[in-house]
Length: 362
Image (cartoon, rainbow, N blue to C red; front, side, top):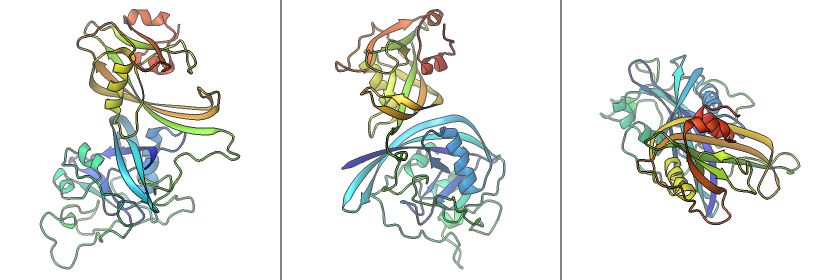
């Protein structure tokens, strides 16, 4: 089975009454009729927070202020591409957003055909993408292999009263007590539409990171999870990058790229063991960092147009030991060590370590 990866970013907008804004997948979406938090796939070099704002503006007609990151999740869905099946891993970042206009207006031709402010009880009655259900604290229903792309049932209520608990009865759109389909705006020529590489749930055949003209540079997008790892005495754990890797000799945060099918927290704790032999527990998600280097050089000496999205967690090691690198020989970690925060100014730190510790070089 072929494997593909992508990064998507979403906004959790909540009004003064506690209702959350949800979007329903259009006929062009791989999961039509399924509700989710509004958002968009992160384009190459784009900051995830900018993807959230773009998703709300382009698809919901709303201006939002993007706040801090609330959660980092990951899941795998299986799609059919002809006779083959493709396993698509999506790293999903969820940000808190403040909606400056409470009347969303989905764009025609996009990947959402309806938007609604929903109470927790109303959201519980809707079919939800698993990550949205998890974020809302609701039961998660796994998705099947890509269902047929058919039009979802209409949002307009039938002439008779809808049954109690149905989506039509419990999720009226914003700004109206009885209308059930928000108006749409004409799609612009630049609207990517549902199923594009830019849509919230793009078609499997779309390109995550297309080659630049001429194909001379390898364009890569990578999701990674790192930890600000401390012991009970407030010492900080750092790892040293091995020779032959970008940043060789610098002190780095424990962590790294996640594997296909691996959630960020699980990948971080795995890397912590491999790079230092320490067992940790995640305390909280601190921040999301975005790195773009159009002229990077890969370990094999190949030029890369590199886009890295990095989440940083606070990690506690309750029973710290002497750090020991346990990963396979030839890995990216040369050594690991505990440091007092007062020692950091004398260390050659990576950019992400400087960011997480609030230190300055030198």
